[in-house]
Structures are given as C-alpha cells and as structure tokens.
Length: 457
Image (cartoon, rainbow, N blue to C red; front, side, top):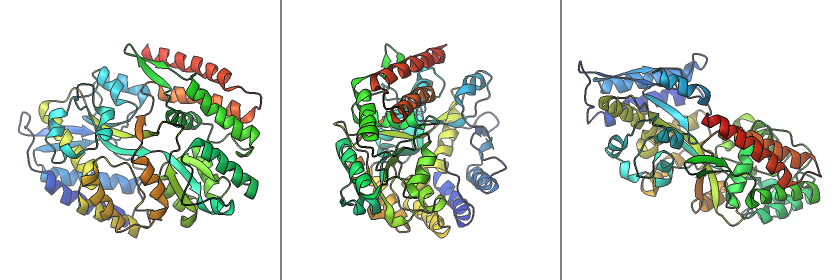
C-alpha cells in the first residue's frame, strides 16, 4: 500500500472525517454494559509516518465525537500470516483488522472472523455493492464476513511512444497474447528496446505468472474435498511458460535482464527500457511521481487473453474478530463504513479528497476497481475526475476491457510460498535456453505441495 503524502490531502481528510461521521452517526449501536461500547482497530500508522498517523487519529476522534457511545482504541498492529493464529488464540486480535484478499475464505472456514451479514445489510448502500467485490468475503450460503477496503485488477501497461516508433496503433493495444508477442517483436526489431518484460524475483515472478495463467483458463490452486491442492503443472501453465520461452529465445523480444522484481521492472518501464509489462492502474503514481515518467507515454489496456477473459483481483478486506459481541460488531461495521467506504460512495466526499490530492500533485483520475456497482461508482468517479491530473484517455482501453473480465482472486492458502516456487520456474525459462516448461513446473509443483502440507499442520 502506498503511503499518503502530507499537505492539503491530510487537511482535507480530517475535514472529511468530521463531515462523514455526521452522516453515519444515526442508528446507534447496542450499548454494552455501562452504556459504552469499546472496540480496538488495527492499522494505526507508526510514529515514523507522523502525518498519516495523525490523519488516522483525527478521524478516530471525529468518529467518537459523533458516536459518544463508542470508544475506539487504535493499535499499530497489522495482520501477518505467521502470527495471526497465535494472536487469535491469545485473544490479542483487534476487533477490526484488514487482511489480503487471499485470506477471507480460509478464515471463514476456520471460524476466525465474525459473520457480519446483518450489520452489512443495514448499511445505506448495502444493496449497491458490486457482487464481485463482496465475493472474496462471502461464503457459499451468501453470508458476509468482511467488507472490501481496496481492490485492483491487473492489466497491460504499455509505452505509447515506443508503439508509435514501431508503427503500431497506440489506440489499439494487444488484446491477446499472440498480439502481445507480435507487438513485442515489432518493437524490438524497430527500436532495439525489449518489447515485453516480466519480473522474476521476490515472489513477483510467481504473482505475474499466476495472473497470466488465469487468462488461459488455468488456476494454480484448487479445492479438492475441502483441501487446497497445488495445480501448477497444467496445460494452461505450460502454455504460459512456453510463450515466455518463445519470446525470450526465439523472438529475442524480452532482452537479457531478468532477475528483477516488480519494482525494478516498473523503474525500467518508466525509463523506456521495456515497452510492455503487467501492472495495476495505480502504478501510474510511481511512474509519474517516483520515476519521473512522462504522462503522454503511459498507456494501459486490459489484461490480454488466451481465450479466458480474466484478471487477477487483489486488495484488502476489513474483518471483525469472532469474539466480538453484537454491540462490538455493530460498532465495528460502523467504523469500517465511516473510515473506508464513505469516499467510495459519497460524491461530495470523493470530490473533497480528489481536490486535495490534486493540490498536493498526487495523481488523480486513473481507474480502479470500485466496490460498488455503476449506479454508485460512476458518479463518484466523475466527481473525482473533475480534478483529474492524469491522462484519462490513455486508460480507455483498460476501462473498456476490464468491464467484461472475470475477477479471480489469489491463491487462498500459502499463496506467497506458491509464488516463490513459481519464481524459480520463471527464472529458469528466462535464463536457460534449454529449460523445459513441463520439467520446471513439476519442480514448482513439488515445492508448492510441500508448502501446502506445512500450512495444514
């Protein structure tokens, strides 16, 4: 997650907090004994990030002022896979905490998060959520165990200037992997710049490989009799490695630098050293503000497909402790609505935040996966784009394409271990001409299976 900068944005968030609380103070929670309900909330920024920490504390104070029957105790703790079970058993988990989208289904099955269906359905915009956004925290019976706080869908980022130099149509970026391969070769042949790049270290190689596999209709992990099993060595995943091998060694359109992570690749893209990569729309922020990329160069399309229009959905979900009382659950959902959701469904709040960001030169206007359906999301996006300072038109291919894609979440169990196993396979294909996809995937499959076995112990 990117930290917010200080300045006008911080001031606007504080003002927004006061306004927003006034709007969510109706419908008081059932008070606990003594007439007050106390909840703890995670994700308080550390003292080393003083500006964003103060934003958080200001909003806590504003919430409590408008809800005098609720006390909030903010804590710096964050969810960590390795420590969560221990903290839960010891009663140390906060009333409200965030988890990655990979986690809710496992937490639901293990009874480690509260059912908040009733509290969520009482929210003013409960019926307007995008069902895809709620799906990661909803069980098969339709019960809700968490609310999304941020989501992203990966797509294809491309350098419009290099496309133009190679004689390609910048308004019609590739929509299939065959077209990606052809465009990459054309760019390399005409400009000498690698046409396509993927990361291969720090688990980001496995992350991108998983994303590409989804577009072939494959999955790297599936449920078998209630047990997560690795499905890395499949026809679809072999096709992904086969494509990378052909581009690397037959077309020679991927250059020679491959042992880099996603951040390294993003830096090379901004410097014009690679023409296409897989990333999120928000990667524009780093492109423009951290790496000094030129706005007119940045283009974005939906993730290309090999017959299965899909993309990887990532993000976070706010969940509630299973030990919370009814009053605490109600207070927790009220806090989630106030702190995370208000700017996503309230046009006035969205405009206030966008204006302040723009004043602080923070990129505004790139698309994102809304938590709500079009009736709510579209007016909010229009309100934000009144203050846009990004090349909105350059994202049109992405916005048109992603609307028709299936969102597939990340592996639910031992996801990072699976990505690590796949890193090695991607590295082998990109650095050894004699590496074979099937053999490398069998090795990765063995490692992933062992990781899943450990996760079940």
